[in-house]
Length: 243
Image (cartoon, rainbow, N blue to C red; front, side, top):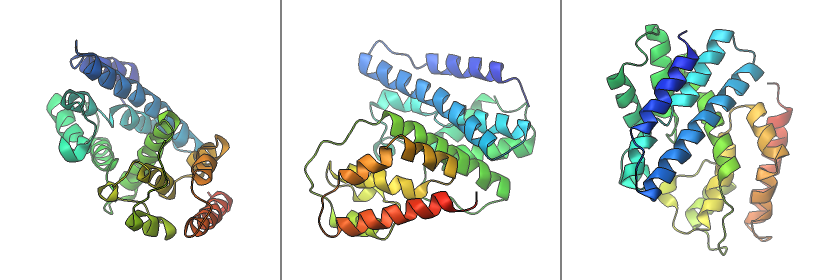
């Protein structure tokens, strides 16, 4: 595995190329630069928690650091909405291949990194070999963990889109394409918790009250009572299952 310090230096220099005199763009670039460093830390912690080897732990950290490399470019579109700019997972793979920063790694490691980055932001991940699935699961959890820790609360009335309510009642991950109101963001966030892969991640989100705050924010009325009951049952089952 190549030197992580060298990779961090390359990463920060890459992001510096997108610094701007426009304060809005600059704030967005710095936000994702910091986010990537934190996700690298969480990916490493998660990899350690599930007993991976030292080389695998380094690989998880590399993916965490590079997963949002294309967000630096996307900030100049003044949006992080992939649907109106570009898919930042796909673009990240392209930029890393162009830069050649991964060339010192063996082909298998490169393929794992690029697969994980490509699919870290997708609704679903296509079946692949166990190593690719493992590291994609790690980055998706680590990414969500930092996002939860930095999202402001949703301040909106309870005008939820029926399609999202029904999907959440079934314990499904919710598509952004169905978001119609600001209040729908509460449902999206709760749906993210159904897409957590590891107890380590979920336990932190539970202990830090992110899940309970989302549940409390929903109305005390049907069908939300059912949604809350189903979610609590899911949490109990997930945390009590064998790791």
